[in-house]
Length: 476
Image (cartoon, rainbow, N blue to C red; front, side, top):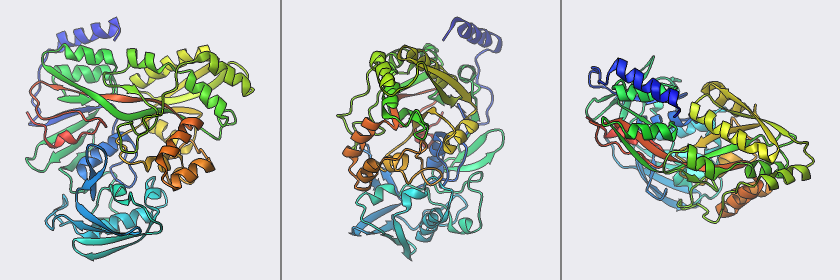
C-alpha cells in the first residue's frame, strides 16, 4: 500500500468515523465482482459458483481429500456402466416448498444433456439414459465405464416443473440449499432458511473502498482479492478480525494455442521461464500462497507431487525464443480484469519478462467483457484462476480437444492427441506430466485464502478453495 493510499484511508476514517450503521439485521458482504449467472448449468465464474453452492444442493459432496461422499443421495455401482442413486430423505424441499424427488434430479441432468450452449454439457456426455424408478430412486446408465462417475454428480438440482417452464434460474434461482434467493437489483439479497438471517452481497470493485467500507462498518466482511499490504493494514485494526489459511485455487496464464507464435511449445516454455514466481509470492501475494505445478494441488488424491514449478531463467527463455526463430523483443498481449490486484500482478510479470526479450502489453477489461473474450478465444495470453476444483475431470474440461467452448472450457483451443488419449484413459498422472511438458497453461500458484470481518461476527472460517459455505453458520 503506497503512502497516498494510507493517507486516503486515514482521512476517510477521520471524516467518516468508525461505526456500523443500522442494517436491520443484515450481514453485508463486499464482493470484488458480481455473479454473472446463478443457473448451475451455465455458471463458470468463481463468484457465481460460490453462491450457487449455497443456493442449491447436489447428489454428491466431498470430504477433506476431495473424495465423493453423499449429500442428497447415496449410490451403488451395479455395473461399470450402471449407477443407482437413492435420495437420503423424502422430506427435502425446494425453496418454493415443493418436495424434491428423483424426477427433479432426472430433469436437471436431462436438461443439461439437451442444452447446446452449456459449458458443463461435456462433463455429462457419457450419460446414456436416466431412469426414475420411484420418488427416491433413479438409475444412470453410461455409454462407457467410469469408476469416478459419482464424483461428477455435483450439479445443483432444480425443480423439474420450473425446468419444463423455461424458468430463468440465472436471475431467479430456486434450489434447496441453506440459503435462498430474495432479490437482485443493486445488490444480491439472500436469506438463510434456518433463522431468516439476510445477506446483502454488494459489488465493490475498488479494493481500497472495500477496506474503507469494512473499517467504517458499512460492510461486515470481505474475502480475498486484496494485496498483502491491505491485509496487513486490516490486521492492525482492533475492530477487524483477519483469518488466513493456505489455499488450493489454481492461478495460471493461459495461451491461445491457435496463435501462430504461441503454438510453438518452445515459446510457451520461454514464457514460463520468464516469470519469477518466488518474487511474486514473496512481495505481492497474501499468506498461504504457494507455487503450483498442476491444477490439482499435490495433496489431492489425484495430485502429482513430482511436478516442479518452472524456475525463473530469463537467459534460457531468450535462448528458446531464438531457437523458435522469434524476433526479439517478442510482443505479446495479455488480458486480465480491471481488479487492481490482477493488474498489479500483470505489471510485475510484464517487468520480469523484459529480461527474457518479451514485450508484454497489458489490456485490463471489465469482468464481463474480459470473460467473454476468453470464452470466445479472443486473446493471446490471459490470467485466470480455477476455483473449487474437486475432480481430475477438470483436465478433460480444460484441455481435451473436443471440449472447446461452449461445450467445455478448453479456452485456448489446445489440441494434442497424446493428451486426449491419456485423458480418455483417465491416466491422470500421465496427463498432468504431459500438460507440464507441453504447457497449454503456465502454472503460477495456489492462492492463499483469508477473510476479514467485523470483530463481532462469529463462526465464519476461510476455506482452502475460497468457498463461502460459512455463510450457513455466520452470525453476530
